[in-house]
Image (tube, rainbow, N blue to C red; front, side):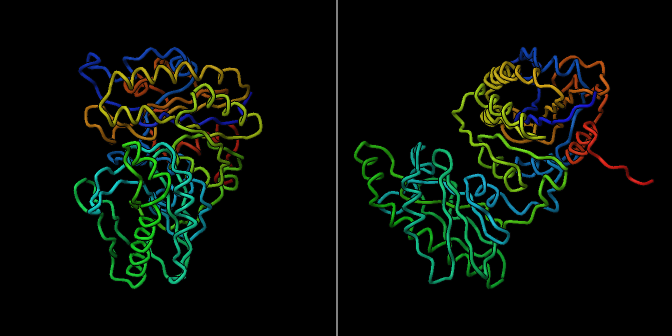
Length: 406
């Protein structure tokens, strides 16, 4: 029998390097992972360079690659993808930005770049969206909250450019930066002026907003400034269903990943970082009842890698392992398990180390690997592949590819 559906489980930042506090094992090697090990033992394994050997992949470029969209062709910056993930309908040519709320003091200097990690910005985001008026520039804005202190901005209009800087000083005790053009075009200079006008108007709206007055009364940092960065122009993506002949959904708490999925035409299934893993798995199972493909991203392993917390990363991987048990009960399912990049606890950043890969389902040539970790998978029958090859391989395993030649 041949599998007919695909689950792409991406454990964000899963790959690592030996950690001293884990006995010189990686978090994967040190963890107890009976379900992932079962997938490895019943499937075929390998290692994968999300983009290419030696390339430190971002979460944005790697997910595009893993979905079959060459980032060298399709990637135009993180901003528009983040905006799409926050629910903004991004159209080709719109300029998107990542944003976050910050706190500035009476002198205008940044004292907290995350506004005390404010948990809910829906009300103030609506005030910014409705109150900022850029009509004199012929520009419309879309502004939406993300999770916590995060948000996204998009600009729609003529004569705009993504070649503009950020107003985020990346440190406290200083004024937000003035946004400037990053090339010599009139479009970039115009867009920089528009962005500075947005930031100034947003600050005025936020200064005396009731939410911020209440936060100040409680001794909390007000969210009285918006910092924007990561400008990019929304590109044109071949729809996923046309490219791969598969219907699909994305289940991801990270706005960036949800935005990438929705940008290529996957149906976004809303989840929050606080949504329990078991509930996220149930959503995936529900989507697989009606869709051919589900992209399922789980994020926290990457965050523990960035924080250098090897023990916590190991324990989270064990939580993921326990949560995925229901996937074994789904018939005709091809499961791919991988990372979008490695995030070693020893360097607290992405690295170019390849990630371990499992393909599990009817039709795979079962190899001798019995453990899911970086070293064991390197001996598997898939050998070493690039991320751009993953979707063609998966589509072939479910008999969805077409012969090249006669």
